[in-house]
Every structure is written in structure tokens, then in C-alpha cells.
Amino acid sequence: MKKNVILLKSMFVVLAMFLITGLTSCKNENKPEDTKEVAEDQNEAKFDENDAKEDDSEFLVAAAESDMMEIELGKLAQSKGMSADVKNFGKMMVDEHTKSANETKPFADRLQVSLPAGLTDKGKEQYNELNEKTGKDFDEKFADLMVKNHEKAVDKMEKASTDANDPEIRSWAAGKVPVLRGHLEHAKTLQDRIKNAK
Image 1: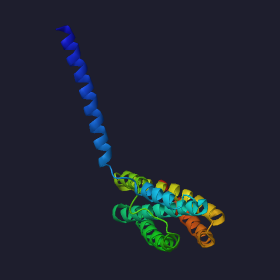
Image 2 (image 1 turned 45 degrees about the horizontal axis):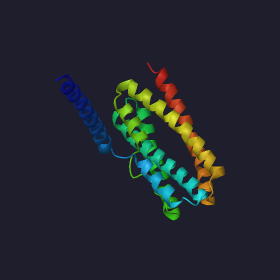
Image 3 (image 1 turned 90 degrees about the horizontal axis):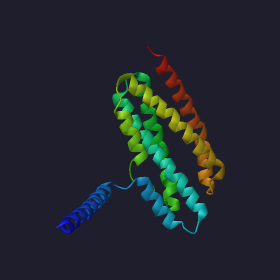
Image 4 (image 1 turned 120 degrees about the vertical axis):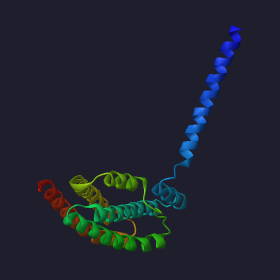
């Protein structure tokens, strides 16, 4: 009798483990794959034997990710921003990064580079974090994100302006560096203005 109880308990534990594992794997399968990872995987498969093209594809994917993120955050700033400065900066982000995205696409087409099809996981995370805020908290968070994102964007663009293998991408990136530096300075001014506002 004792053996049967122990056996039943053991079987119950094993069954419970299978159920937990099954539910966990089902949960993970329902989560859509990050659009950036999808694009990077496709490019890696295409350019496996060509490191130069693979490096340029990584830059174009990062540029597209950045543009999409700034466009969506900019739209959110226009609708939820408290100050006119935030709304105006948001509009500038939509306009400037839409232009940038339109300039990136022909490079991707020519080099047969896959770009993210939509907002990446990182973009969604920033969007959701910002969307949770209201009032001055929203404005502060938006300005902080703009400073942080543009610091990274300037670094990536400067690197591409000297390291990109494709000469047209190098030239385009070099032209974008001063534009992004301007955005960064504007974002820092916005950040200071919001912090000092009463």
C-alpha cells in the first residue's frame, strides 16, 4: 500500500512537471519574434560569406530600428505631451526620422538587406514606458529618452561614417552626424527646460 502511494505521488510530480514545461513552452511560442532579430537572422543567412555586407546590414537594421522608434515616440509626444516644446520636438522627430527612414530604404534595397518590419521589442518597451506617464512626468521621461537615444544614434552614425564598407552609406552617415548632433543638443535643452519648469 505504501509503495502504491509513493508511486502515485511520483507519477503526480512527473505529470505536474510535464504540464508546467508544456505550458511554459506554449506561452513562449505565442510571443511574436522581435522584428529586429528576424531581420538580422535573414541578413546573416544572406551574407554569411560576406562580412562587409553583413556589417553594413547590421548598421542599416540599427538605423531603421532607431527611426521607427523615434517616429512612434514622437507621435506619442504630440498627443500626450504637456508642454508645447515637447509636442514640437515630437513633431520634429516624426518628420526627421520619416525622412531618414525613406533615405535608408534604397540602401537596403540595393544591398538586399532585410529591415525590421515593425517596431522592435526595444521600441515597444520604450513606447510602453513612456505611455504610462502623464503630465510633467511624461515630458521628463520623453526628454530623457530623446537624450539617451540620440547619444547612441550619434555614436552609431559616427562609426558608420568611417567604418561602413559601402561608400554611399559612409557618405550618407557622415551627412547625418551633424543632424543627429543637432537633435541631441535640442534634446538636452528640452531636458533642462522641463527640469527647471515650475
